[in-house]
Length: 182
Image 1 (cartoon, helix red, strand yellow):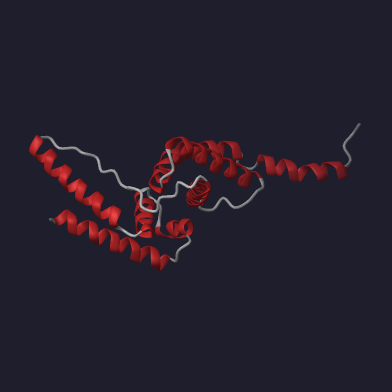
Image 2 (cartoon, rainbow, N blue to C red; image 1 turned 120 degrees about the horizontal axis):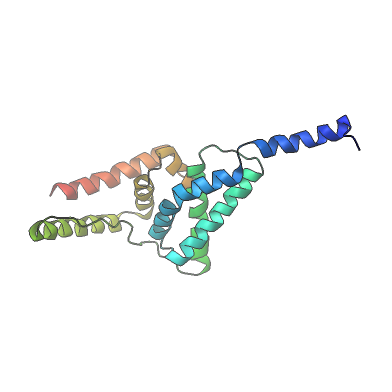
């Protein structure tokens, strides 16, 4: 049976949608790029590693659905952090494990001599103490910035204004700089 022009017209939009960049390929590429940073960020929220893996999978499933429905591809990195943030907090609250002051930054120890290693370790403890003492919002901004997100992306993830992100990071970095100078 030959295709009528109406049948062909009905199939064209479907083919056009399918022929766009494959959502599967895009999601796989983003998964490889963002899995580690997302798990690291979720750990700073207090999400256990096992649950963090599930949250990341749930976030990427949401991304697949988002792209499959032809929704915006703009700033997918920020979008992923926002989704993982929300899903992670929802799980923590559901499981009643929400701790608003988790230790957020692990600073690697690397000193060539034992004396330098001891001095580095002391400095790291001081920096960790400063990070723990930061208000929760400042800590989150700092961690997301350390993950490479831009100020605008951080604002979107944490539902803050751009100015609030800027002030938060300036405060946090000034505190860390004061300790680092000592």
